[in-house]
Image (cartoon, rainbow, N blue to C red; front, side, top):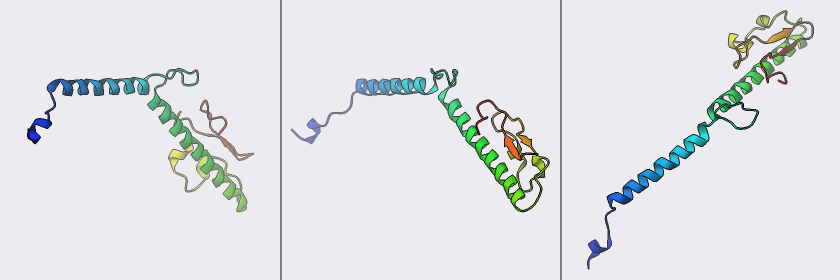
Length: 124
């Protein structure tokens, strides 16, 4: 009995069973990951869609914070509040509207308040 007798080559049946097990596991993971959300908040949206919307919500919140800081800086340097958001210098055009809905932010020049009209973003 040499060393060759102890080592057994894998049979084709074992390889096929392993391949099928991997396919089943990947299929289950895909179904769990891509299925629409079951709770009432997500309204049938898949996990990647939910993640994308959350990221865009963070971008919207960041845009609003940047605009508010720019307005505050203008008023603290004895400048008047801008009559429109476009009067703020150094702000890219893409920051004047919500990345989710694409609607422009609403600005009240008398109070200096900026807000988003996109549903769910009212609290930003």
